[in-house]
Image (cartoon, rainbow, N blue to C red; front, side, top):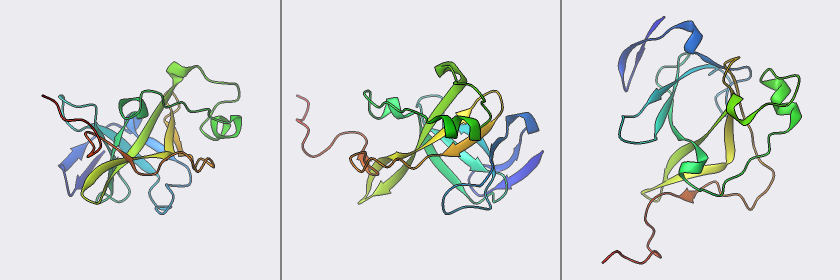
Length: 149
C-alpha cells in the first residue's frame, strides 16, 4: 500500500507491516493503523506514522532508552486485547513511549506506554494508574546535571 505523509513524502509499505490499534490512540480514535519507521540509523528514535491520517505521526522510543530502570507489568487484560490468550514472553512484546516537547525540552510520556504484540501486529496504548510515573520525563542533560569537564 502507498500513502502520502507530511513528513516523509510518499511511503510504500506492505500490509504485513501495519500495527493495528483496535480503538485508536487516546485522543485519536480514528487512527487505527500505523507503521513504525526508523528516525535515522544513528539514534534509537522511531516514528509511529499513522496510515489512516498521514498528517499524524509520533516520535517514539523504547522506554529503556530513556530510563534504564523502567519496568512495565502488562496486565493479562491488555495482553488478551492485543491477541494473547496466554502470557507472553518478553521477546514477543515491543514497548514504546511517545516523546514530546515540553518547555522547549524533549520529554517522554512514561505513563502511557504503547504495547505491541509483534507477531499479531496488534497494539494498545496503556494508561498507567500510578501517578508517580512521569508524563514528562526529561531526556538528555538537565540543568541540575553536573557539566562535563
